[in-house]
Every structure is written in C-alpha cells, then in structure tokens.
Amino acid sequence: MKKNITIVGGGIAGLTTAIALNKAGFSTTIFEAASEIKAVGAGLALAANAMKAFQKIGIAEDVIAEGRILPAFLLLDQQGKQLAKTNSEALSKKYGVDNFTIHRADLHRVLLSKLDPTTVHSNKRIVDIVTQGEKTLLTFQDGSMHEAEVLVAADGIHSPIRKKLLPNSKERYAGYTCWRAIIDNTKLQITESSETWGNSGRFGIVPLAHNKIYWFACINAKAQDEKMKAYRVADLLEHFKDFHVPIPQILQETKDEHLLWNDINDLQPIHQLAFGNIVLIGDAGHATTPNMGQGACQAIEDAIVLADELSKTNDVAAAFKAFENRRIQRVHRIVNTSWTFGKIAHIENPWLISARNFLFRHIPASINEKQVQVVYDVDF
View 1: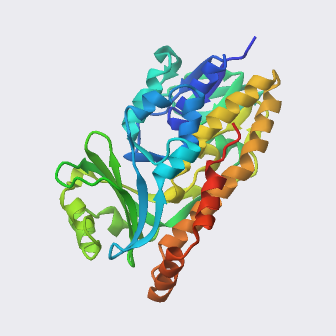
View 2: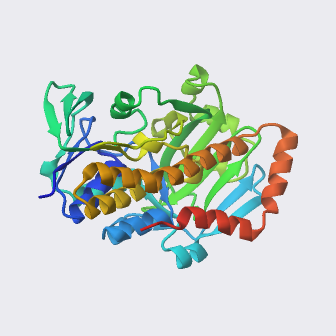
View 3: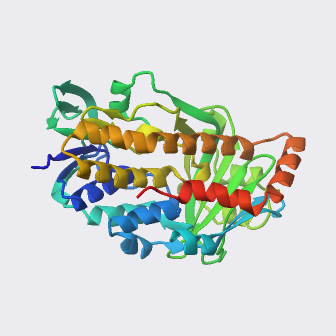
C-alpha cells in the first residue's frame, strides 16, 4: 500500500509535485502557510524543460491555454542595440514549447484545478518538526499537529523545515534589488521579450496573454536599502530615463499600486536534499536568482523526478536519495551559473561594460547552443 505523502508549501513546486504524485498513484496532503493559496509575484517565463515536465504529467495543454508562446528573446544594451538573440521558434522545434509566458496567478489556478481541494489546507504555518522514527510530527502556528509518514518540503527559500534540518544553510543577497509589475499592453503593443543591460541597471520586458506586459527592473544596492524600498514609479522613471524605447513608456503606463519590490536572494548551494523520509524540493532546496529564468523550471523538474523515483521502490529513503543523486549536480550548476550571469549583467564600470557587450555580440552560435542544451536536456 502506498503511503500518503505530506507536502509543505502550496507554490509551484508543491502543487506540481502533488499532481505528479497523484498521477503516479500516491495520495497527497498539502499544507500552505498563507491564509489563501495564491501566486506571489507577477509574470513568469517557462523554458522548454519545464513545459516538457508539464507534458509528462498531462497538463501542458491546459497551461499553454492560459499563457503565450513568444518567438524570440532579445538581449540589448542601453541604447537598444542587440547583444544577442535567442530564436525561440527554432528551440521549440528541437526541444518542445519554449519561451512560454504566463501570469503566476493563472498558472496557480491551473495547478490547483488538477487537485482535490479537500487535500489542500491553507493557513498552516510550520513552527516545528520533530522526527519520530520513520515519521515526522509537524506543529503548526495555530496549535494543530500532523504526523507525516513521508514529508516533502516545498516551503520556499525561507523554509523552516530546511532550517531545522540544516541550521547552517544560508540565503545570499545577490547585490541588486528588483521592482516588478504587470500592466496593460493595449497602448504599447509590445510583442517581443527582451532584457536590457545598462550602465545603471537592468530592465526586462515579458509580453503575457490577455494583452498584458510583465516588466522587471533591477538596480545594484545594499540589502534592504531604505532608499530603494521607498522608490515609486517616478523614481524608476528618473533612474531609467536614458534607456531605449519603450522602457520609459512602460514606466509611464505603470501606477505605483502595480509595483512589487524585493531584494534578489538565492540559497547558497547545499549538498543534501534527502533526509530519510524527508526531502527538500524547489526553492527550499535550491533557490536561485532569476537570471536564467530557471527557478520555477527546476522546481517543476523536481516534481517529475521525485514521482519517478518514488514509483520505483517502496523504500522512501532510498527513493529520496536517488532523487538527490539525480538533482544535486544539475541544480547546483543552475544556481551557480545564474549567480554569475547576474554579476555580469550588473557590471557598472564603463570599460568592463564595453568589453562585456563586445563579447556577447561575438559569442559563436555553437557556444549558445551548447549552453541551451545543458539546460533543456532533461533526464525524464
């Protein structure tokens, strides 16, 4: 008889994992800290590896219906001159649907629709876990408890479960802070996704379905900078006023109430994901900076691999160890490469910017193809 699997965290990692496990014949129970299970953040771009995972569990078409597939991704300098271009249509033919964009709330809604609502419990914030033999006793902030035979920690970068298991694990501030918003695209009519690396910050543009645009702006700053925390649209418009069209125009169409702000952090790579009948997945195990667009993608991959390994054996601890063996090197590579990309994107020295831009304009297509292949080739 298959054990019931307890999942802590109702984000993309937790919900996708529940769907994958249900499809494999396991029953699941999800506990989410927030009072309502909903998306935190704005837009999301998913690469071919994530879409292949959704296809594997039979929900790709439902997800695609709520988003938008874009033909290309452009990397630009501050004047709008091209540094690099990714032909997403060509990649889609080779690897499956690529450069797919969706509002996080729409993706959450699709994922939740695939689960029995009676198995999803909100307002259940973990305050402690105690291992009792092969079982784990969870204590929630509301005073209730739950005994888990098998525990999947999908509770994000600030995971209290990880902190209990690995008290020395550390979140890292990347050195830059970020604003995001979703606005209407009716007036702007932007059709291409792009990222601009300027001499005083970075700006990304992501068209979404339903005539919306997701944008983000990143600036080098100290952690929890009070000045940055107080920034409004007018401050961002002043900061990015010398950036190419349509960046100032996008900001002009944005209202202060649209803004979401947070520092960019990741999890310093840890070397253990499996702890007997407990496993860490998604941001709880390998939170990454967003520079490769792979944070959600790797969480979605986790779901597929975890369900696969649990389907192979009745020994949960062995399955979790096998999951760790399949995932640890890959997620470390993503985290470290994304960290490096962020440092390169946020160079402020004019000479180094010129050198970087020259190099990016002249990177051979074969090198780019190899980098893409490393990310998009999955083992499922």
